[in-house]
Amino acid sequence: MRQLRRAILLTFVLAAVPLARAGESPFVAAKAAAVDRSVRLLGELATIARAHTTSYPNAQTQARIRKLLRPLKSVDDLSRFALLSSAMAGGQLAEHQNYDGVFDYAQWVCVERIASIPGEESHTVLEYVLKPVLGRDAHSAEQFGELISKQKQLSKLP
Image 1: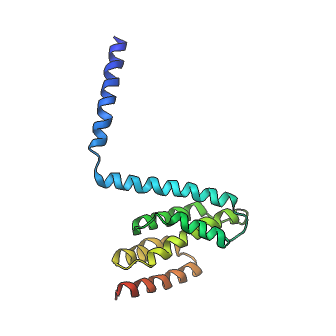
Image 2: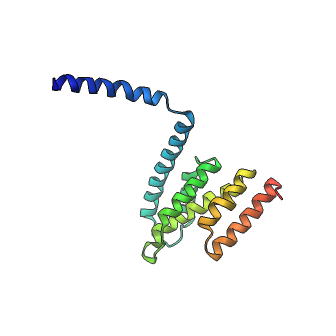
Image 3: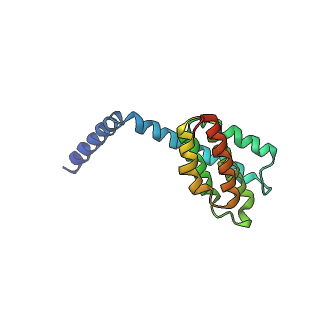
């Protein structure tokens, strides 16, 4: 009897899982793929950060980070990665400066790329999603102000 119940359960699982995936929304599939890509890139960025030995990424490290982030094209992907990078940089303690600097640089690469994309979506994400989270101190608030102004000019927004 126990073996029969196991066989029935196994048959159910083997039949139900593929059916559940077949019914997955294309929007959910696209979002899941974007999140998977961001997590993979975050892991690769962590590898770069582990090997980084200066407080701010040098030109070679900057080039590696920019190359790593090239696959991120959409405003959504770039903003997600900027927020993830900021979270990884954390409190930016002095003893973590070498490691955190890589994530901080990646965050600003994403923010600057968003600012170079014309359109209302870019403006909205810069001003209402990223600036309140990433633009808390005076220097970053000033950077956001400049980037938002630049982006408005690209989009010819009021």
